[in-house]
Structure formats: C-alpha cells, structure tokens
Length: 170
Image 1: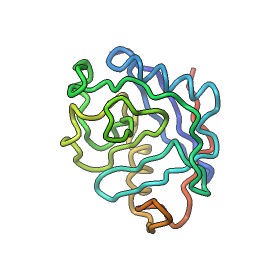
Image 2: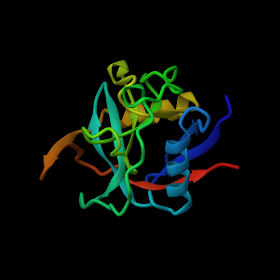
Image 3: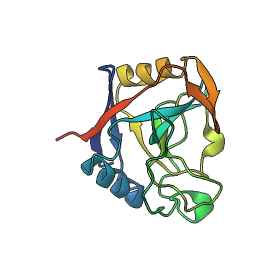
Image 4: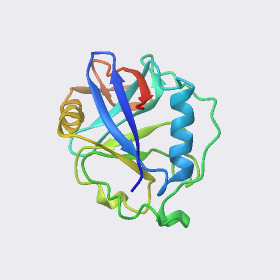
C-alpha cells in the first residue's frame, strides 16, 4: 500500500514517525497534508490523554483555546458508507481522526491509539500508523503522564505535550 511519511515533532525534542495512506482514506489524508503544509499544527497540544486508549491532539493551544477555523470533512469509516480502511484496525500506533457524535464533523483533531480500541473500527476514520518502535514508545510514554480536569476538558496532561510541528518527509 502506498504511503506518505510524516513526522510529528514535539517541543521537547522527541519525534514520532508515521505513514498515512491516501489510497484508503483520500479525503482524510488530503485534509491532513493540507494542514501540515499550512503549518496548522504548530504549537498545538495533545490535550486528551487516556492510558490504555489513546492520545489526542491537533486542535487546541496550551491555553486550551480552540484553534478552529476549519470546515469539517466527510468521515471515511464503515458506519458512514466507507469501507476502504477497514483493515486498518484501531490497535496501538494507529492514527485516526477525532470527531463529535456527528459523522462528518472531523477537522484537525486526531488521535494515536495506545491500547486496544478496536471497538472504534468502522466508527472513526483510521488513516495511518506510527512507523517504528521508537515512535510507538513515545506515544506509550505520553499516555502515562499525569492528567487533570481543566474547564470543559478532562484528561488534560498536567505538563503540556506541545506539537512543535508536523512535517511531510521527502
């Protein structure tokens, strides 16, 4: 399967390498690459971290202010009439789009699975995966940080996990 390599660079110097798959989720990967090219993810945080489940980011600043300004995309998952990514199960290391209860509401927020989340298969748009053990180890380390409730948000890391940028690798 053809893939596009990306790297999620954190402000603390760590990086997670991943590959995304335009053949199985063309709308999702196209949107994600556009946001990378526009530097949309710069200085956003992983604002939701749940051990044994996932780490979520790509939409909020450290202040927990939403970046916003995006139109939602079509949800590429089975419950929404899309089946090309059904083999990309929500297992550790998978990248998938976060959304509200509305099927076509994903914009920029994504999550990296850190546990067995196969109950999300067919319900959320998986579109990539971490590409090496070191990258998975970073995601698994992040899931272990202490979290708090702040304002409307639960599971917020006490010490911010800041995305420096996400880059497409040549």
